[in-house]
Image (cartoon, rainbow, N blue to C red):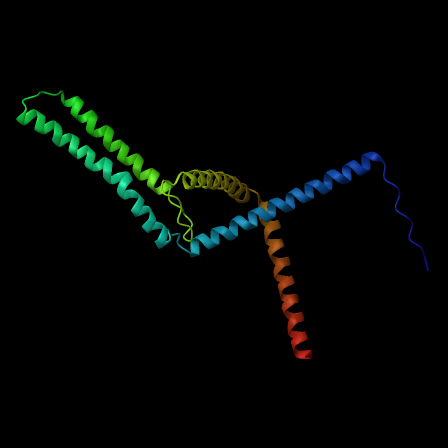
Length: 195
């Protein structure tokens, strides 16, 4: 038998170059995996419509009653109060004061809508606290995380659309995976027949 010659020992520069090549290959593979996951998520989103669970929607509605209802009725009460004072008490008010007072309270109502949605537990199985301060911070963090993920996914989609090499690598990866699945299914069929 012939012995194969031993591979020559690598010097420090060759080892560093090999390390860099390996790291780049790992980065490329990780990027391809992320691109693949984004494409799979896109398919899932297209197939299923996103909806707020019924329990969560009911919770949001219950929270809106005090956070929106009170400012709304208060603004109407302030307006009626100004009208009453002007009509029956013969007091005069600047129209800008009346408008500013009612609009300010209506703005509080708009903030109440936002807070009532954001302070509701978005988990259907978890009720949440009375004021919802913990849920508010958790939901704000979820939104920040989602926006960051969306931005990263958009960059990846743009890169995928413009990078032909990446598209080819993804299709090659899909083909290899389908071959593996076929081999596994063929192997399981053979095992089933042998048993």
